[in-house]
Image (cartoon, rainbow, N blue to C red; front, side, top):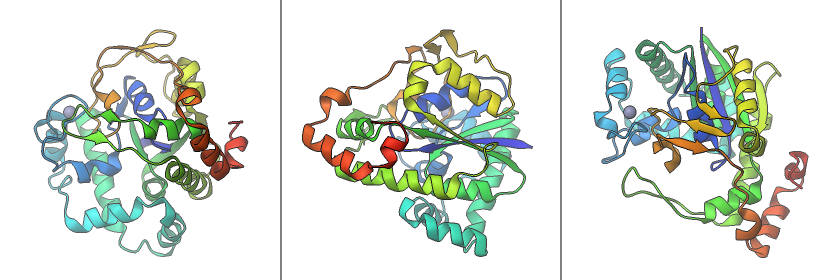
Length: 299
Ligand SMILES: [Zn+2]
């Protein structure tokens, strides 16, 4: 049975890097935010994690050959994707999934074929899907024939707000990653975390909460813990030193610019928010994210 490691959590929480490190292990493949594949596949100039334009990438070409039509972004599919991507609609989606799925079947079938094609092409036992949103996670968990494990990556919302406030250029071309107001980031952080805790979290054998902060400080221990959680051998080949990884290309289709790096990278805690976030923004974020923030240990 194919295992899916679904990375849930807020954007800018280190999920791109974590997925990429996990994907270096034998039998594990990182394909980025699978949820977004249909949205980005047709975008002109959009590049894959391997550096090719998505339309020219040999990996995604092989996936399309293994399951003809599986990557076609038809309008019904795109509408379903937009709907399940809204964290605020999580309660409704949860009900729909239990009442008879209401149009989500077509999406789930397509996703099942996509995962199967990825296994055909790579021979992987584990697919790392860093879609992050609770809605797509609920759909994946509702699919039979998959062994779904969720790692919920948390990060201090003040750090997430500071990161969303700075501009990053996406080397895939013309895209700047968007910037967002701290209040909006804090509300989205709360909505997504609560939906994940309420609707995605299941038993201890399928759900693990881990923090960006621990990953940044003890990356090898966190990666080993996740490999054990998946039943895979520990000892990631990505590490050339305790906090240094050598990352080979992955075929992730979305995420932050870090995914294009194919060189040694030192993993270190980014806590620039302590100086970069204004007092005003900090107070706003703290007000909105209390008390869940403290419960996660972010004082
Ligand atoms: Zn590629």
